Length: 201
Image (cartoon, rainbow, N blue to C red; front, side, top):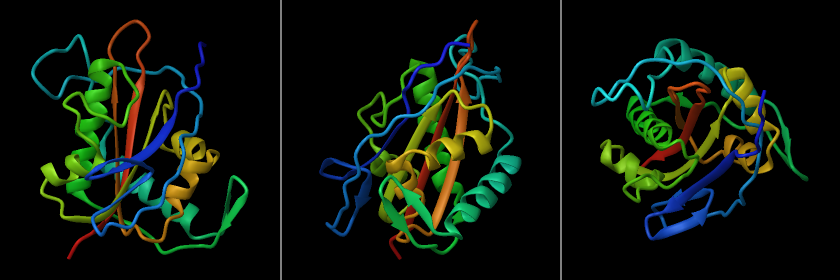
């Protein structure tokens, strides 16, 4: 199986790219880009414009939601070492359907272009994608990956990467969602988008 290193983590401020976290309150923490593994897996169906030769669909969202909330909250419930820094246990996150919609659209966009990037084909970033879904956010961050076939695999990949781990252990975030889309072709590839946020209420 062909493996390439291509996992990234980042989030952007409304004013531009600042690293890993986005804040609507003008405070931000920057986290660098990290890398993980890339592999290949199966094919689903096109949820969009009928172009079934380009992208597939997402995995069952009900199963994914349940599994991801359990996996991520398990990680957050115990102290973690992210790179050289130790992070204390933090509170749980809850699932957000609006965040899920933003994550799904970004996964579909990456899969349609077969490109792993935090910047969407229209120049969007995690903040503009959340806003487009009607999610009023105070702070947000995004982890992306490609190639992992299961929620367990991608969470372990993110946990093993300093920047992704820091994002998962950030106590500022109270809501989360994850989505994935597969490319279609001889060597399909699954694109994952995980978004964390705190609503601006």
